Image (cartoon, rainbow, N blue to C red; front, top):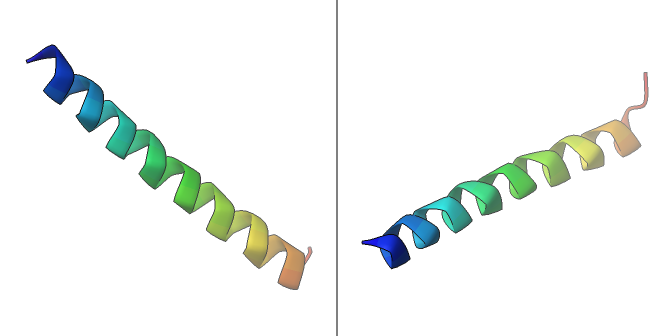
Length: 32
């Protein structure tokens, strides 16, 4: 159970990292 929870948390962190990475790339292309 704990391993599954850790895997789920890692998946969420990975999604957040991807979202942040996309946001940073968009800001680089079109800075305000």
